[in-house]
Image (cartoon, rainbow, N blue to C red; front, side, top):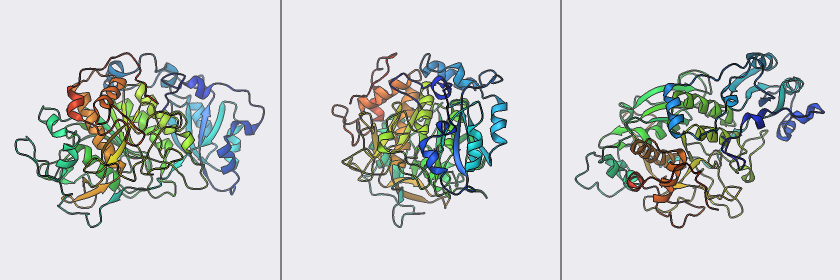
Amino acid sequence: MVVLRRGLVLTLTWLCAPTLVHAQTARLSSSLESALAGPEGDVRKVWVYFRDKGPASGQPAPVSARALARRARRGAAGAVTALEEAPIDPSYVGAVAARVTRLRNVSRWLGAVSVEATPEQVRALARLPFVARLDLVRGYRTRHGDETAAGARGTTGGPRVAAQPPGLSLDYGASFGQLDQIHVPAVHDLGLHGEGMLIALFDAGFNNLAHEALATTRILARHDFVNGDEDVGDGFDRGEGSHGTATLSVIGGFRPGQLIGPAFAADYLLAKTEDTESETPVEEDNWAAAAEWAEGLGADLVSTSLGYLTFDAPYASYTAADMDGETAVATRAAEMLAARGVVVVASAGNAGFDATHNTLGAPADGRHVLAAAAVGARGERAAFSSVGPSADGRIKPDLAARGVLVRAASPVLTSGYDDVSGTSFSCPLTAGVTALVLEAHPTYTVDQVFAVLRATARQAAAPDTLLGWGIVDALAAVQAPPPPSGVIFKSPR
């Protein structure tokens, strides 16, 4: 996640460059210093950034042929360096692993590893000559969560919407309203349903993949970054997966007469990144690890319904001032995805309006992240939907879609449905439209996708910091003439 004023991608030259260190404490961030003041025996989650990749880092890590083709087609020329792609010297990783309670994730993009370590172990890491700096792994916590409508769980009814008109090729059932608002049925009737797209979802887990609306959803790979296995459901380990079940069904479900997602014919990658049982539910190192995993498998698009703002003690919070497109690790990793040609769509957040500052959560603040706000059935902004601008003055959020009483699969019953609310659900609807645009225009760069979606949204003539460029319009975006290529799309301020 890393696009800055200095260029598209923050390279490892900055992340891992040697620095003059005159004292051990110079290698510790202020937030980590504060966290170390607690009980000595308690473990902290810590990033360990290296000065370089090491003498035996080797050749760039292999990626799939699909990923290479996507990079060539949509990536930013010259933005990805061989140094970023090179693996970290195993001796560096081994030396750190031998000194900590647990090694969590290894990030070649960031030139770092995340660990669980006691204060004594952290101080020992700080003395290693190849360690440049150490910082806390942030534990994200939403200020306001998503909601299920009272009495809706497991129902077969849905929110009241106008009856579907005759003549459409598909029966959308109670999901017609959320798709008609963004003109998806008309695009489906053009023959575009997400075919050929590979979409990665980063979420809290996916516990009801046997649901009837997911029976035809093609899942090519899955990984649980919380527990380190391939079971993204509830299973016997940490985390509860109702949230991911809902978001997957909103974008990719297919049960005529009940629920149809905008990109129901796409292929999917499922990443469980959120530990719902932790006091600090979502950890940024899991998100960054999922980003590298999905990109290497060739994902065209990432939809992440995880919008965060404040964290539980003893973890230091990001503040509104940190929502500047370059500070949060999740944002930096999202920008690295964009540099490689992956479009990232993220929930703007559910923190509502604040007249004094933005209420965004990483990675929605990214320059090359489409932040999705939420509206109701009539197009009115949902009161819970987070607002901008970004800390550096850019218009955020970017786009909007239905986020109030959205039709979704039940995480409990295989033939039940819920009416759910939150920017978690405007996100997969927006991402589904993005997939349809990519299907119709496979050579579009990330910047062209941004440009066409913004230019064709409902309030493109007067974007604001409540709904950005407005409610997304799938039909207009698919049919619009191609925007100029080769020029980074810059947001007005």
